[in-house]
Image 1: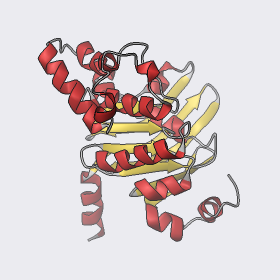
Image 2 (image 1 turned 180 degrees about the horizontal axis):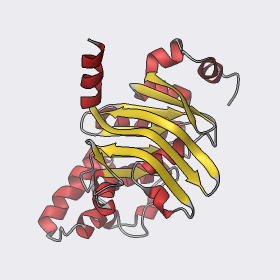
Image 3 (image 1 turned 90 degrees about the horizontal axis):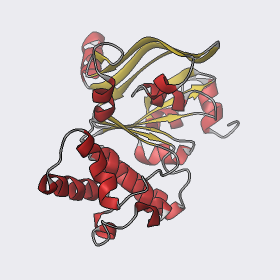
Length: 260
């Protein structure tokens, strides 16, 4: 019975890492991490600064390839395929989108920000792009706020609007996984609440993996949480269970606010 449940859980994983070790030169940043990310759920990665959670996130779409001296051992999979194997990096980054801590809209119009990715992937027709732009902005819950100013600069939007625009930009290439790296830490409480509501909605269509320093945010939006400390994944599981009945004393100390 246990093996059957394990097989069912594995079948539901959209992405996963197994025996993952990551080094920046001599520095051992991630230590033997094994973790599955369930399909169409929100997984939160928590832990103090420098614990490895953002490093893991960037490994999932090979952003760490851009870092000098970065070396990865172990397996990182997407739908069971090793992303360091035969999967082209451009294809990986289309399927696994990322939104960063600071909103980073391109210095161009709102429309062109969203159309940028689809154009890169060969979509040139105006009618098709119009549909993609509108649907992406709707999916990011910002269409009604910007529909009358699509030709104006994205830099004129508020910080919270810019971040939702960046989410829309990531959604425009129809990813399967969305990575959020502290995507609300630079925002005011109202904008943060809008992003959190949006993340919960997006989980019906996408697998969402988010790094957050805000433990209450993890409780509000995620179904699974993993706690990291000094490059090690200490504990992972159902969010409610991890916060109310942690199995490791280090997790208990962190979620109770004794450190971090």
